[in-house]
Image (cartoon, rainbow, N blue to C red; front, side, top):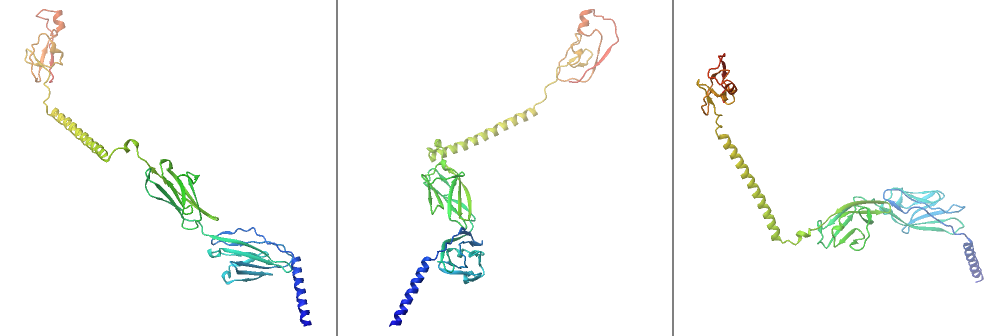
Length: 342
């Protein structure tokens, strides 16, 4: 019994000594300034730092399961990271070619001899890139009588946060504007012409983003014609068509009359020639000939003339007659004139 009592006493003393030693030991502090958001396919670097004069055992865990244990450059990795994990520096974790399955809750513990174990936990997120952003409209045609119109934003991958803008300015979500489905849908209630414009949607996650734009047109009716009934509108259309037909018929009639008159003028005989005179010698004179006005000529009117000639003395003109009224003028060589045909 005494031996058992002595053993119990020794164990109690050892326990108290351990507790006392542990209370005196300094707790190590582990810090990290590493990002926790990464793009899929990129390398993940989870850096840590701590202060210790001794080699520490560094253990990384993910969702409660051990990933890597490192001590004095000796690494032991779990099968899930076999060949994709490495320890750099004094215990920082590097994962190559990240996948979506690498997202999760990570923790690291640092246990140097003689010190209390320090630890640090954080969430790691792996995101797809934002691709193929588009904006659709429902209904496709909207006017001022429509109760609402929806603009829906979508992306093939990576979508997480949706932000709406109008004409390049941030859109205040109140009044007519309402967002649905986590911001993916912008609903405009009781739209009017002032809501027309360019709307853009920005889709983002912590490491990627993309945007798309759509023009929204709110049609409206002219108040001056909105009160017309269907029959009145049909009458206006019929009247307009009838007026066009009547105008075409009038143009055809005018063109026909003009052409008919032109043809009649072409068939009409030529105007008669100017009156000619016949001289006592039997020749004819044209009105264009100066001898036409000679006082001694006897004028015979006719509608046509023939070629001929006449003899005119020097005194056969009006001015010579009044200067020398004698019926027997002095002889002079005769002059021959040829009449022209009119």
